[in-house]
Each structure stands twice: as C-alpha cells, then as structure tokens.
Length: 110
Image 1: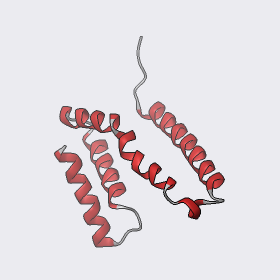
Image 2: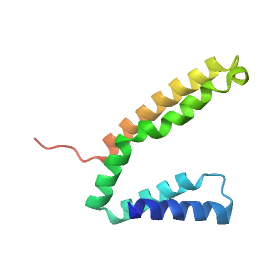
Image 3: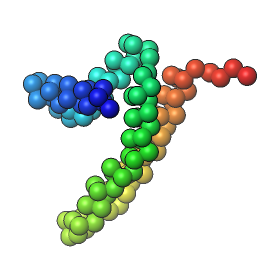
Image 4: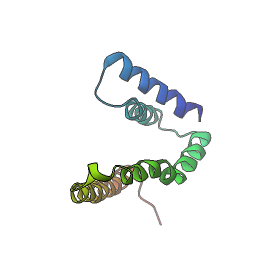
C-alpha cells in the first residue's frame, strides 16, 4: 500500500508543480507503471494490495454513477449521448486491455 500511496503523491505533486492537464492520479499510475517496467519485478505486498483494490473497484465507481441520477433536468436529452459514451468507452477499454494482455504476458508453455 505504501508504494501505491507514494506514487499517487508523486503524481499529485508533479501535477501541482507543472500544471500538466492530466490528473495527479493518472500521473501517479503512469509513474508506478514505468517504475515496475524498469524493475521488472512485482513485490508480493503490491500484488496483494492491487488484487484487493481491483476487487473493490466497482464500489469506487458506484458513487459517480449514482450522482448522475440526481442531476434530473440537467440530464434531460443527454441520456443517449451519455449511454453511447459509456458503452463505446467500455468496449474500447476492454479491447485495449485484451491487446495489452496478449502483448505483455508471456505465452504459456504446455
């Protein structure tokens, strides 16, 4: 957990100091990704923490989805574009993840 918090803090600091139009969270994830690619090793603690956070990811996204329903009249006439954005974004995300898994994971030997 310490590594994740450290890279989040580095990302937030980089965002604050440079004014880059990318959120500190995303910058922190990119820095963590680069660090792991350079090290070519994943610590057991980081792996366990990552699996736990991934299993709870739907709970982290739920408040944002629920918040849309309280916008009421502001969202009138915007549901179709929003639905299309969610469906297309989800499909593109799944395809990119599949592509990355095939590129980065070693082939299994039988």
